Structure formats: structure tokens, C-alpha cells
Length: 329
Image 1 (cartoon, rainbow, N blue to C red):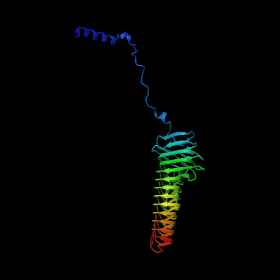
Image 2: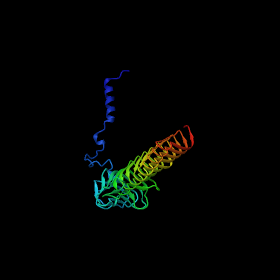
Image 3: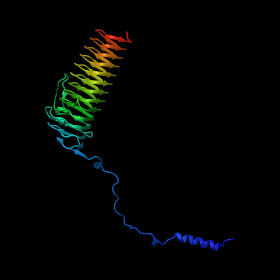
């Protein structure tokens, strides 16, 4: 049976009318905007509230995060004193300096027995110089960064340079969890860097031990009267001294070298792939030496109780003094 075209058009019209409702059938919302859009990101103050430091001397007495806004200079006091636990101090690339005519005060003083501290990214500068004979004097700070009496705990110093201080550069002690990393110290009258763990750092022109720590790696220390590097264990380090042992390790030294003008170049209980040089003392001295070499102008080139694949050279003294040797003439 054929369907009339008129009937088809009528059916289509009825179907469309079922879906085409009048405008009054839909609810109408307000066309007025609700207001300015709200913030979609947190501010820096919400993420990490930080307190600016724009004058010195300044005492940090509340836990939190602090940052320098400019270079700061004092004339005879501590530049910054940390007097509470839980402090992060960002030097922000700026310098703490002192013009004290006779060296006094600290660049950063850490009060007695504090913990959970972080200091990073800046400079501490005094005016102390070395007369050339290992005597240090002049203006500026007495200490760069140091504790007052009891060493801090859970403390990290990163990316800080210290120069021209009469006593210590960075002194955190070695008894607690302290780390100094990627720091530099130059021209200080006593200890350069003192911490439990020292990484990728350098201390030069120091009156006392330049690098002093339990675990030291990828670091360099140069001293006049103390050891260049003095550690429980050392890896990939260099130490030199004018009057003391260049590099002294009472456990294991790996891939290290030490030089001294008048004492032992390198000493280690266990030396592996190390080199020692001395003008008037022994080149390398170890209880066990593996793959090591030593040279001395007038002393013994290499001295060991047990030596494996080692060599010693001396210009005027004995080349070697070894009790048991293996894989060597």
C-alpha cells in the first residue's frame, strides 16, 4: 500500500512538535556575572611563609624560613644569631660582612645545642689576612658560621663561601648529624670546615686543619700548621700541609693524595689507590696499602705493614719499608 506524501508530511510535523517545547518551559537564570574570578593559585606566602632580613645585627628567635634582601655589614657584633630550632636561612646570594677593626663576632652564630637548621646560598666576608708565615690578623669576623659551645644537630650548610676570619670558617663539630656541602673557605686562622660529613668542598690558607670530618668526599684542604684533610674516611680528596700531615685518615682513604713540606704526605690505616709526597718526611704511610705510591725527597718513599701492587721512591732515603709485600719487586 502506498503512503500519501501529505500523510508523511503530517507525521513529520507531529514528531517535531513533540520535541519543540515553548521557551517558557525552560528555567531562566540571572544574566548578571557573579563577580570577579577567584584566585586559582596559592601565593608564595601561603606555600612557604618567609621572613625578610634587611638589617643587621638580627636575631632569629622563632622557627621558620628567613631570607636576606640585601648585603649586610656590621661593625663589631654578630651579623645573624640563630636562637631557636627549626630555622631555614637563605642568604639569597648576598654577603654578610664585618668592619670590626679587631676581628670579633660571628657571621652567623648558632646558639647552644640547637637542631634542625639549614643555611645556604651566600657569602660571609671578613678582612683577616695571612702575613705569609701562618700568622693571621686584621679586621672582620672572628668566626664565619659556628656554634657557641655545644655543636648543633641535624644541620646542613650548602653553597656558602667564607673568607677572612680570625678563627673558624664553618665549624659544626663532628659529634652530631651535620653536613657541609659545596662550600668554600679561604684565609682563616684556625679550622676551615669542621662537620660530621663534608662533600664537594674546599678550604685553603687555613691556620689549623683545613678539612676536619668523619666522612669526607670530593674535597680539598690546604693548611699551614694542621692537616690539610683529617678524617675517619676519605674518598677522592686532596690534602696538603706545610708542617703537618697532608692527608690523615684513621680508617680508609680511597683515591686520595696528600703532600707535606716537612711531615708525612699521606697517612691512612687502609690506603687504596692513593699517593703521598713529602720533602722531609715519609711520602705515604699505611698499615695496609693497595695500589699506592709514595715519594720523599729525604725520607722513606712508602712505608706499610702490608703492601700490594705499590711503589715507593726516595731521592736520598730508602724507597720502601714494607713488612709483607705482594705483586711488587
